[in-house]
Image (cartoon, rainbow, N blue to C red; front, side, top):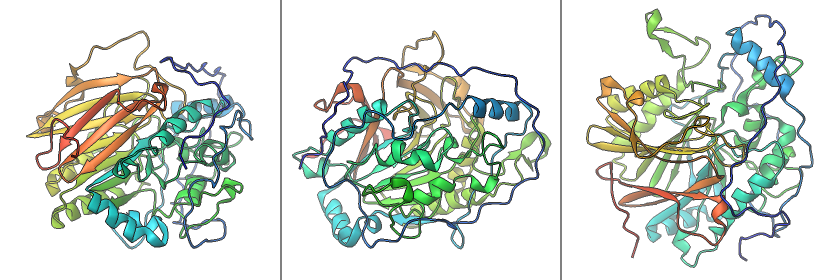
Length: 478
């Protein structure tokens, strides 16, 4: 059966920006200090009954929903509360669940494909190519229209005459549910939106998936951070989540909020960059202005150990495929959601110590598409922001336009003797990236939803030679 689903909502073919009205501000009340919370325990969850086989799409394709079953209430009061915390320097990263007993938690693609998983992966290896989808910031609050546009375009990619071109999974770059990762919105913003997507969906959390606010806006219980994400993506076994409300898709069995996804020709190293608007935080973060004292002493450095273990294993295994780094907060970004250079310095330190660098870095957070090239030594590393997966679009900067490519010395790290070039962008359309990897090349294509289901040519693309780590011309398989 073709994967295309019918829609009763009118589709927009023009490349048109969607604007969100700013929330009204009010005087924030005084916020009292709190004791640093304990780290949430790992996988101590309430979830549905385990099932033996993972399930993905509904058996029958149905029309797109026209409205949400649970209307999204105004978050103005909650954002006012958050603004007050930020102003008082009390909106801080929250402890995250550390995966126990292992430095590098790993999930194999074959383990989420059911009893035939090993055979399916073997077929991918013999075919010589793997394809997958990726985007972030997919949750929408005003209704399903924008998510429908993206998902309908995603589904069209399953209608291929060449079986090697069919996507094998979707990798969500975070901010799955807005505004604060609530259980009650998972049905509308995730399960129903992707009810016809016929493949596994993996995810790293974004800041909105982990935020916990004090009453009255939130529970004030720090260990509630990420609870809904864990219950839907990190269960010990496949199960029917209560949040799915009877839809077929089962929970995902990711080992944690940070993990390596291992598939033919690719390893995706996913990091959790915590709850701040800016910047991303993956560790206790040494403060150079205070002699290296941790800026966030309540946070574990487990993700630094994880990244080092993952890159070291790439080297010891002599892995020749693509190494991708996925983190919600982008190291480089224009606009309201700025980059995270301190986080990048931590990543750089580990890359230098292991001698292994990613072939590309994938992020969300900024609600648009941006692509950069970092030249470091002999390498050219694409950094992509793919945060236009469904949530309200954002311009790069109000009133500004940019003629690309353009050098970005503001993002350069002098100690690395690198350079950064801003290559391309799109803040007018929702969309996603289609990633193709074979034994020689990594190709990342950007597809706006407004191009329509029948358009297969990407609006932007970049290709990396896996052996040299440099940009090259794409050579389609013969």
